[in-house]
Amino acid sequence: MLRSPGYVGRFNRPRGSNKNIILDGTTSKIGNFSLIRNSTGLVLNSPGIYYSNAINTPRFDKSPISLAPTGLLLEEGRVNKLAKSADLNDTAYWSYVTVSVTANGAGKIDGKLRWLVAQLSSTANRLEQVVTTTAGTKQVFWCIAYPGTSVGPNLRIDNNGQVWQYNFDLTAGTYAKFGTATADKVYMVPLGDGVYICGYVYTATGTSTIARLYPGSTYPSNVNIDIAQHEEGAFLTSGIVTGAGQGTRDNDTLTIPLANIPLFNNAEGTFVFDFDYIGGINAQRAITLYNSADANNNVIYIEPLASSNLVSISAGVLSTAAAGSAVAGTSIHMALSYKDGDISCSINKGTVATLASSLPVNMDTLKFFSTPSGTGRITGLLKAVEYIPYKIPNSALNGL
Image: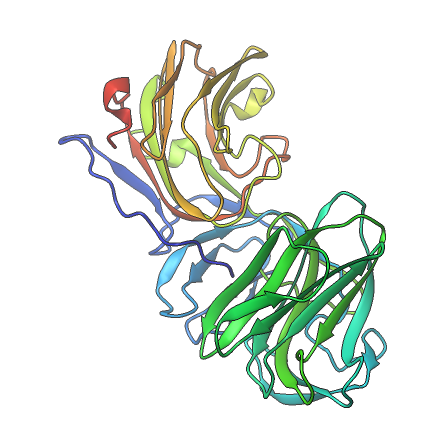
């Protein structure tokens, strides 16, 4: 649902390189590969509506403005702690304080209504839910909002005596801080026609939290809301429609059997990855090449962290080498070449990092955004995966 500044474009390959585009997220080319997500997941479709994609089905996302394809959406798992997140009229779960909530036509969530939230008095007008948080963890509170009569919505978090509160002007596309605490990051993402994702990241200091949604900062105000979400994490992810309790979206894990890649060469080769990095990494080892029969000892890891490392584990021995940097919210281009005794990587055409390391024996799997044991995650839009069946020289790797 979020968008980064945009794709950095295709990169020129050496003449005669035999490049092989094995995945193109902008044309829904995925081949004979496997995507595992043990839950449904929202994704934008052509009419500009977020619909629920089936379990274990790839989510090829689109720009909310142009509806142009943007890539294969891969996300870490999340929990929306708000019950009835797209049914704001359910007073069994939402508490009303001098507001009314009425249906106002179809919303952007498939099969769900848009809700007009209106003030009934000049003070204390809001709807709210209590959620449980863990002290010291980052949390995200957000909603999809449409213009009403107000300069709103106004989102407030009360946690352990601290107040985070921001007002979002849907007409001007700006926001202002109202609370005493400062958010780690504020989001105001345009979805077209004056509709925005509005929200922020904060760091909880206690366990009991009240998530409050006000129609606006002045009386009388009203605003239209499709869905509200409160999730634990350092960045927001796609919406999770909940019922009578919390709702969960599982991790996306993309697995490509190397036998499915034409001309794959176990002895040497070069991979090129392009994706929009729209969130962050909550664990290391985001992209792995490994032998599935010996996943603990025969692995090449790529870790596009702020202190980016190429990591190779062979026979249980760990080695690292700096390979450039990656910044959340930007497009990332990574090139990895391998040959026994010579593994190299460049991130965003940066300095080529090299390791004089033995190759994992009989590599058979390329997995995105998960270690073989399933603990590493990255959230992003995968644009393309390309393969060249020989090792590009280290001196040329950052020119790909």
